[in-house]
Image 1 (cartoon, one colour):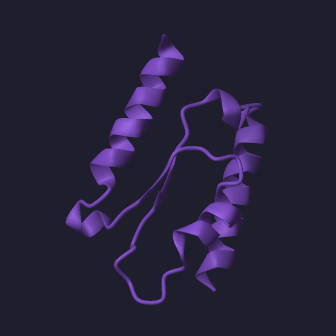
Image 2 (cartoon, rainbow, N blue to C red):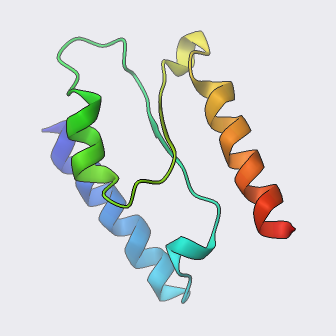
Length: 85
């Protein structure tokens, strides 16, 4: 099931950050839920509950159409600028 793969990927991300002693709370971080145009997608509320318990900025997207892509980029860019300030 795709959700299990998403959870595993998120675990891998946190493990990789930990291996480099990077606290995810100290870096610009956002989540993009892509392919929202496909059939049988999970409700975004369920994705948030499973993949984003910390409440980082998150966005729905249909990247092939450009939907949600620039919103995600804009949010991450703002987080980067804030981190560098």
